[in-house]
Amino acid sequence: GLGAPRNHLDNLCVILDYNGIQLDSFVKKILDLEPVTDKLKSFGWPVLEVNGHDIAQVDKALDQAEATKDGPTFIVAHTVKGKGVSFMENDPEWHGKAPKPEEAVRAIHEILGTPEPAWAAPVIAELAALGKK
Image (cartoon, rainbow, N blue to C red; front, side, top):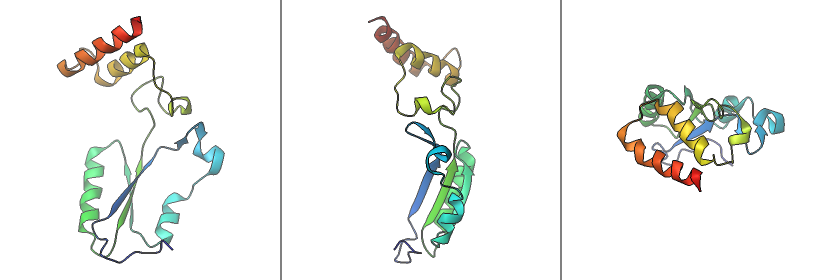
């Protein structure tokens, strides 16, 4: 069984990107995983929960995981699918669907703002060209 591994796995750290969406709907509507943290703890793993959009929290959790010396660590990173893009955020429709070129440009502008960084200009130009085809 999974149990609480103790075979020199101090350097193992598992991160669950827990956004609550699966292929075509919200996880809680299909097969609710809650209480996911308690389930993971029941296997004997230390579990840390973080806001997966907060890099400082993720970094701190990774430091804590590295300091754990009696087995592996599990980090549950709570995230929002499509965060920062108004028409994609927390919408299962976008889980397995690529945006059209004009939607991708809009998403880039929403995330990066305008004017966009210089590195983004060639990407946006290529997407604009694809949208005209």
